[in-house]
Length: 268
Image (cartoon, rainbow, N blue to C red; front, side):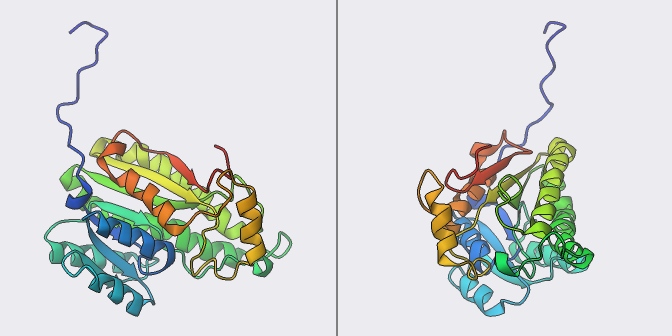
């Protein structure tokens, strides 16, 4: 070995196949979360379907995959509940959570007419979104980190938005906190990379249709569709496919990235 050649790492943990992963999807019972949970289950993974209020939807989804799905109630804003969830999942499946999808969106509706404009935005609104979209993902990461570090493998995928690149509606609180989550995605990627943990973000635009976007007028969907190269609005299933990419072995060399999945509406 010459003086300019760096030695190879002493060991490299092989990426786990999807079928060998235990995946936690926060807010995994409805809307985009249900699409993500279903995509992982169809790929053969074991999935913890987290919910706060949607007990029936979570139970129905879990019942479709009785050997590989488990519904667990927890408010993602409560670190103690998240720690208990991680412990319960490990006891049930006999393995620790390997893959975390920070998807939960707490008490938010995509209705631009009902959102506060610049001169109305309050500290309370910003604080509420910060609790659900920044503090909660951090707490979820901290709850699953011990298991990931012990395994030398982890995949963390945060759900973001294209709105801070293309702020066409006044979702000030939502957009600001998702921008903060992207920053944490990149700093956590650097912090956790030596432990074999990849951290990435998948950012959608308005999805057609979830519970959160049900209040969006049809003409808004049509306007967005007309501005995309694909001439249609992205579906939850299409975004879920991108999430699977970041969990699959083929993305083992990718971390700290933000993939925008919106039919080409936003570039870069």
